[in-house]
Length: 472
Image (cartoon, rainbow, N blue to C red):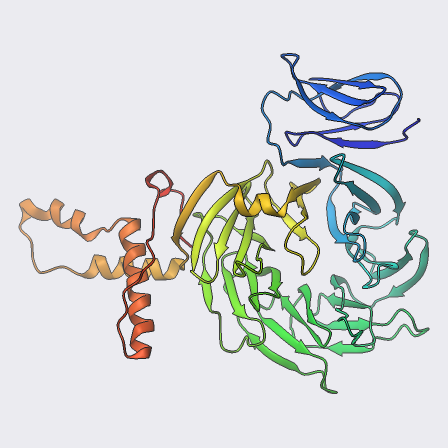
């Protein structure tokens, strides 16, 4: 059987793109037999097999001497601008790649990704999403347009804007089919949020809001009646459209650092926001109360990039945070206020997390180093780790404030001979500072209740990690 193009992903995360003529994008030995592709490492050992029918061929491939069993990373050779999962076919992805939209299907049984359809749109695709019923694809482009495609990627309609669109979102439709009468949200560089109904002949927005004063970065639906938005003005806003005035329900800001991503957990009823400098957790329906958790990054000088919901019914408070300049996803327990584990990947700049909403298992898809499409099992990200963290999530300013207090506390003048000893005593270790901050926070909470309570949580630190760990 002739195969026009097959994207093959083997056990160590390296990618081979091969056709029936044997072209490839990698280097080792891969042999195509009548039963499928056999992969051997440089020592001649069989390390992978996938049953894809193809012509007889032998091509070069990667060295599989070291590999992980759960990795799948495919280099799409251009900037990935968006990933959207089909709402009724969770193995079908619409991926914005450079100036094209590509359908990529994930065959979980064969551990294979297939490109099934693509279209060149001629302009940079800044973001995309499926419609709520999966019948259409919406894409915002670099030429101040939104283009609407049917399921077969035939262009149906164009919307021309007077300014640059900066984000796109999918409205939520509940089980009783409650909806706002729109099928797409668009955010703009001015901070405007508009909702459109492509099923009508009108190009005018059904919903039009101006709750932000700068570029709107993220739009996430909370329920059929509203959405959460974050913008470069530093504010996060819960928009409630049930009011005829479309007024904001609650907001919080300015956040510390420019907002990058939002994740809403239906189990814990928490909304987690990451900025370039901090991670915040809020009660989903009340931002004005303020964050229930504010933490700096888990590692010193790292910049949070994106947030992944890893919560389950049994453990509804677990989230993953990726970084602009790191290959790791660090797991944050927002109930215990603890960084708990670190999951390793092969790429920096992990973002654009896409996963089936309201499902706790299956696969998560995301981009790495701009052009890699990465696939992981959700359970692997939750449970597999290369390092146990178990240290308190707190903020850098609290640690710096505590450090200043320690440096200013001295019993009086010291003799010249004791000056060195006094200097050493003025500096606390990171572990001690973090423990003191934790004790002070507990005292503050206990003081509000009129009772002092002892912590029953043990905070563990790894000595080797103290130089890197900011502790947020």
